[in-house]
Length: 179
Picture 1: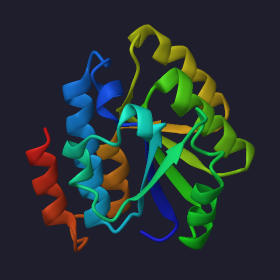
Picture 2: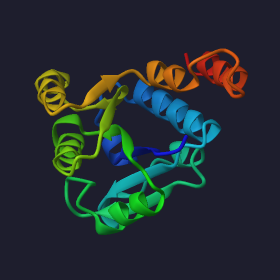
Picture 3: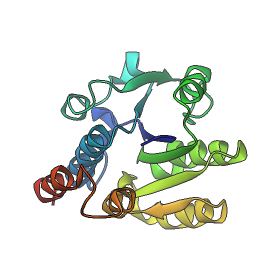
Picture 4: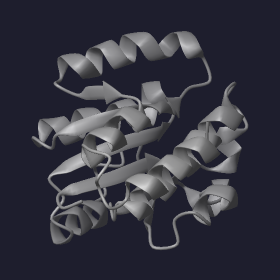
């Protein structure tokens, strides 16, 4: 899908273990990675200090063999110069974002991207935080910054637009697999 890219933030085992919904989050992230592959949407994976905390979960990484994986020292993924250069070279004009943790890295990444006028859609079923009550005020604030907030299936079905889309059958198999 020309112009669309997907950034999944810090889906590392050390962080996933702290998420109360880690199994559902991992399942939805795997769904998104496979849907992106099917629809030819480039995937970007940030890793918070991977030399100390470990890399992206192997369970998820196997679904994204062509992903651009980059290490970061800051909470915002947006501040990484290599990531921004990659987005430019891939001609990304709209970013889908998921990951952890919603009130920290996801929030700071989205705010920075929006400050640079990058349109963002937050994947509501692929974000999480240790304290679930922290998510609602953060999401509300991000929506005020003109960030869309949608479930991944809604987004991907919108991309497909109709049952005659060449990827429709394969996509519906993914939907059934990751219910």
